[in-house]
Image (tube, rainbow, N blue to C red; front, side, top):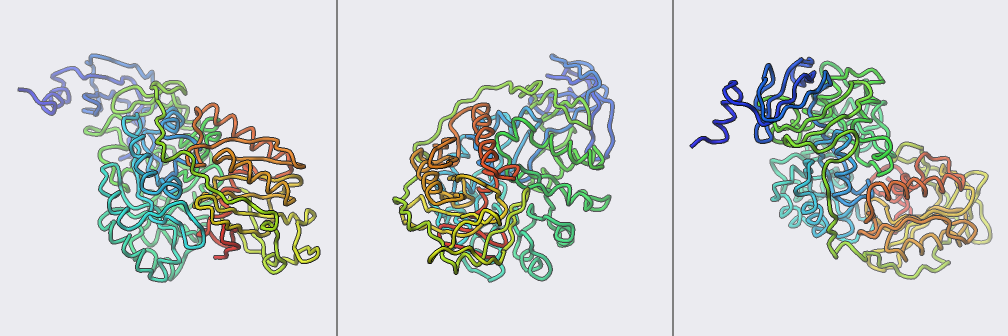
Length: 560
């Protein structure tokens, strides 16, 4: 009896027709850096040969278009798209994405192991390879109150899942440097697996200590020297280009003839509006090539380099024995995607998915907001706390710790619009503890009203920024009342809101509906005076206690 392997051998040696032949394309060879005029023969979803193949049961003429491996995102949090898993697939596949490596620590911070398992289940059967790293820091640090915890035992269980490729970003680098035995136990549980790093601003001897602890990649570099030091220590350097973090162009000079095999692209966080209107890795490639990166090298960084690092089996190249996860491109400058194939089947064409999905959201991810009633007195800011402020920069999630002379009225510090000193508030929403943190923030630019969001990395409490207490309170209460979401308030009136009823961080609507709502509420925020390119996008990071230098969590003003 003939085996599938024997049939593939006969096709490879021109003795039988292929299942599918992609004819007349210019094949991007990520191994040699060349572009080959060749036909690609496919059997049972895998490539059996690249060359002068002519016979197949089905033939698609590529008319000189470029044929490349479909793109692979080296590190992303799917939750930051605001979309349920199936809608995320609809968002990224038409842009040429064939696989992602995702760290679902956002859902895990709300629902723990059950949230992680819900994501894994929802990803099965989709025409995109969704590979998982197990969240290592839930909660991210002791300075914020999450909805759940991923214990070492939880991590060990999750690592057994065949869709798991390693341990997720080790965000608690201060704990690593301090030799925390709990962190060591988590690292030991992942022995022999890739361990994703997360070390913003860490260099020199501290970077030596971090790297020797087992971390083998990093996506948090924002400057050349930091990125260079991470390359020197053997880390895979992930050049990040997300919706709120734009570090790729700054780091691009580090990609040289010597270093490019140790460099790849990562989104980290890319929201639904960006995905729909700008794209995914196709947009990153377009930007990188426009800045001078060789196109074939750029494709390799978005394909084989990622697959090689994460040990993804037989993806990331157009070569015999590799899965036919392929993208047909009109060019290697704009990276206009014509067709996308997943395991030999057409998954998208001309910007539209060729597959249907259905959302089956577990009950455990509904009704997750449990907030104690907020009292006006809890929003007061003392002059002592107000002697410092969170300083923000558009396009960056790192912040600056600012020393300020607060504007004081009676026994409290108040907003100072002339100096753009607004109130930043974080309210615990998982366990009804009543925790409320308050501090100053500078750089947001609001002139009126308040914004609130239950997307608040990583614990996902409710974070708000505003020019007066009454509007801040209304915005927070609006978010709580809809079991999570975004709200914009001005002069005591709700002017825009967006419900996120799945764990308080995801929409249950389609990609198109969610993107339209998100675009509208971001426009509303800018209409209140914010000077930021993505006001809600940046607000979501203002309680993240493991990113330097200052934050406000539900436990108060935090410095790092």
